[in-house]
Image 1: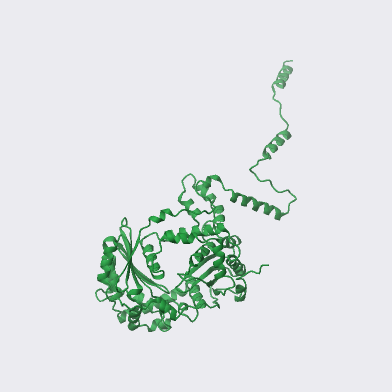
Image 2: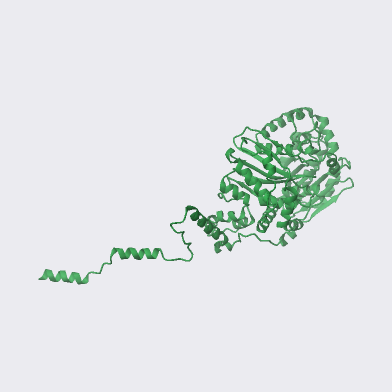
Length: 557
């Protein structure tokens, strides 16, 4: 009896157990509850291509409507910005002496360092076939002793003041500059005037430096990018001075002597073709007084480089040069570009930014193209709590910001790297793309490059132009960060334009470039124009010249 009562009591207090199937149905219902924010999957009967298309559409929709947390820093869509801030840039003052020597300064009195340099409108372009290489040889010999200082004393004087003395030679310009503390500016000017006017050119030093230059030539031959562009100039401007290399042939280097160097100085290192530049902690009046006292031996020969260029103008010719001896194929495709003073040179700079650059080894994945202002501003605005979020959205941002050519190359993995270039000279230029790729990707890469270049003649997006303008302006401002880049910018512009173009004016010229301007300039320089091609490596898969020439225009009906 007692046992029955206990069993009945246990039955009355036991909780009801729900069937397992009902629990499963409830959980399934919760999991499949409709959510407006989630995309509806394609039906099971859809083809695989339809599924991929739906996936791409959803990704594009995310890019068009980015997370609002990201938009509080900057918009991924390009926009025109005000340039009021750059109107307060320091003034560039220029003084011309009676002998034609120009002195230009930009004072930043808050700085404690300064860069002084001598920029000469002379380079390998103004040599003959017999003297090719003299300008570069002179750059080496200029530091090997003067009438007042031998080479050791010159090095010790620069090192004792904690300065930096250097030089470089290009096809149209030669530069000697020193970076020193503000109190050492007069001594730096004294050293520069001494090496340019009183160099001794000792025969033993010439023999020793000749071996150094020959070894340098061997090192340059191993730098494929240098070789490519030397070949490209030899191809595009063959039988003209611009087609010669800066270092010159080995035969010329072995024969250059003291008289060649002195003749080159007396002919090309003249006062009207020279600009003395100082930037940083300098005062214009003080620099002018020092230059008047020191630079007294420069030749007043009035011959200008424009007259020399008119005698031997650069003529663009189309040809192809090949060389097979490296594992990766490298090639450059170039059209004739604009000169420094051509009104369309600014538009070509914008077009170069539109084509962009890409490198497989750079961080950021396949969609990483050239850095854009929106990406730069995002990095500068990073805070600790949102850093992970920014890294997470880096790929999506660069898909919006990189050029279409960079996207095509990166997503399809048809190149190791690519870079658009735009080189200007006094009467001509080169505009094109340089790329490195595996041998089996050359055909696809060549098609992508020619398609995107020729597309500039037909179809240009205003958003792409605005984005390219912003990228160009950002790169120009980032380039002049420091006294040495500022001095180089002043010297180059005075030699090429005859004046320093204010950045407010330069940015106004850039902003004047729109989609119609790009198409007009592309039709002038690209549409149905000859191309120059230089290639090295295993380039058996690279299309021939006629293939490239045919794709400088589209047949559209």
